[in-house]
Image (cartoon, rainbow, N blue to C red; front, side, top):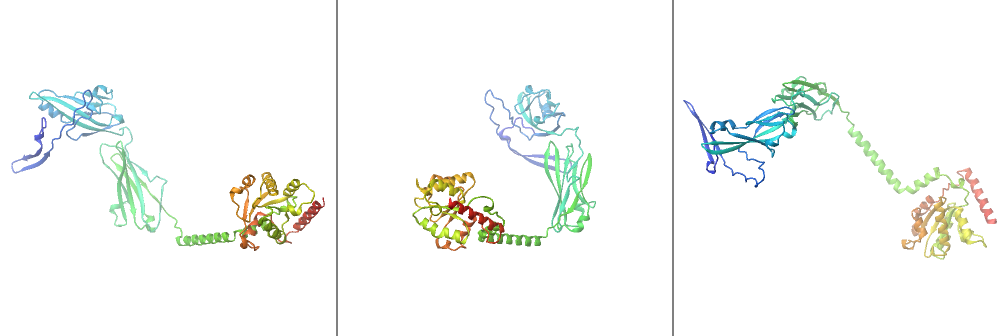
Length: 487
């Protein structure tokens, strides 16, 4: 042993140790570096991080157990010192005066009576002595780690696979079987984990398709979890007949567990892909047909399954048309809309200027006609709902009927209507409005989208002769209308 008491900057360099006997000598070289000491702690403060010249020794103490720590190199210093050296132990910033009965310094040794988790860390012992009348000192460290208690079971166990676990394998693919083992802490690292196939370890098999690899997963207070993976390339049907065992061992015990394999049901990929492609193509085709013939399909459905409202209420008119007087909208209503609805589509239409009787009160007549109609069609235009107009009166009656739940409103836009021109009543009803737009010459044919969308908003009308009760209903409606005109 070569001691520097103390080390100075000039001591740095290359040193050679030579060991000789009668026939030959052996030399070993070592290079020494002398580092500058760290600055001292501020005046009044405590120097917690004492400089250590050599790497700390390692000590393992079981939790809830005890052990004794010796200060490294203390005995050598005692042999060279003029008197017995003085040793002081530190743990972080805790001095011996602040320790509890769990840890006590006895001379140059540190006795740990009851180990706890937070007692882990680097302990430093500072040795003060005199040699040839000169005061010297050095500091050594011991890194203390807590391990699992000695009274816990120390036999190894298999965590994975469990007794109920089944590995799903697919023929023709690579299969990976994973085994995890738990190894409690022991003072010796004599442990092993491995896979065996029909009683032979993977490295003893002649088949190169089988290979095994191990890895460390984690450690906790000295307890280890290790993993072993068995890789089977190009898994064949005859491999299902083999036995696959995972085993763990240490000097306290042994455990093995057999893996259960089950062939994965292979889906007919080609047939499944063709089926999905056909289904997707049909879905896209049906979606395209629906987008093109949506109105026709809805009209067909309504004609077959919807109820004729004439059989469920006592109203006289299918639709009451409210329009802007003295405008292009009035010409459209009287010349086109009314004619098609009555003559071609079979609807009963109420137009106030035509159907009201002379001498009656306009307000009462308007409210009565709107109440006797199943729909209110609004055809707004310039000045349609100005104050005191017939259109405003009809619109208010329709909004009241909409609130009562016995009337539905339809907005027919002959010309675009700016939102700024909408009166308060029209804004109140805009959420419930069904809008149908006139597209000029494109909307004149009865097969155009305008008439189809309008028929969807109007009551159901089946072709003549499809329902015997319909004829009776029409007769009752005609009689009620004739009676009302005679009043």
